[in-house]
Length: 434
Ligand code: SAH
Image 1: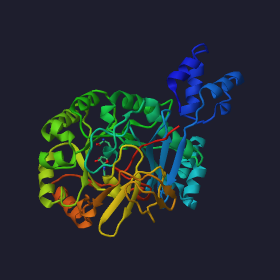
Image 2: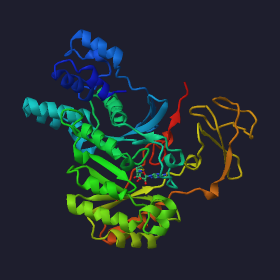
Image 3: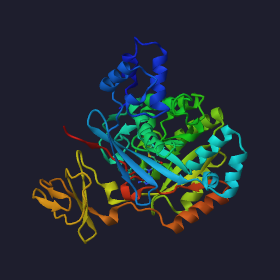
């Protein structure tokens, strides 16, 4: 982990430009080893290497389509958090990078500076978006979200938040690419960890560090009014996304308990303040759950609610794997289908346990493909009929049409990384012993 406070402490007796050199190496050159920082004198490099190693301990999972990577990053206190890199093929960029004769001719005619730029764009035919976690677990307990089923552990520090982008920046550097966008849509509620999130945003945005444009950073929140006021006054061009998810208080309170504390009226009042203050377009996120918030009447109600606001609505088909409905305090996993529309889940130390061949009965030992599960107490049965389900395509299209016809701009979120449980609402933490 990169501990900035410790770095400053270690360099306090050095000339002041040393900190600039060190930070450049970390946040611009993305080095993972001090020995690569040849701008620093050798003894200093060696000292930093032994006292402040730059390793980020992580395990990487890649989706079958290769468009999503999930990093399971282990923190100093043994908790691991999850962070996701999504790679959208970028038409604009691929065109430049297509290697066609005409493009090559253009390169030939350009100045050296232009040539470098085009070369860089050619390599980067993907838009690389990192989905950041801001907390270990989440105290909000939204009905559809796996993270919210876990116990809240603690806020992440600014360094831990930055490390997630740093990890993927190092990975992308290998192919000459970089992180273009950052969204705070991973584990946790960013506005319940406001100061650390804002410190991280400043590092990501800093021209001398990651240099990710503020307009390429988005913070998604369930809507904590006080923090929306603060955010409006920051004077930053960072995007604000509000997890609305329902057209009225009755449904929203069912889906998101926080709504009982801050009902929609109060939330929208602060959103209006934000828009007036910043003149920036707000994104309303709307997770679409079958038969819960996806009826045409809900679309009409939603349109009335947000009409006239500088905003757009982003529809998200609910990711509703059985995992979303299992929670255990401690290690958890392993689900299996019993054949009678029941799943069973049991506690296990098996890290990425495969669900086949599991026969577990409370207190008895059982085995799985990945080894044996000794004490599988605390299992629970879940009836599939009780699970939330994603809205059908037909429902989503109807919903979209109603919103568009009411003059509301509407988009739909692409689903990334479902097979590695890296999609919206699927991130979890684990605690590694020892
Ligand atoms: N706490 C913040 C950020 C984390 S959730 C917030 O509430 O916005 C990020 C986004 O993922 C939110 O829009 C949330 O509504 C969405 N989300 C959570 N669980 C989901 C699920 N199971 N399927 C689809 N989207 C989900």
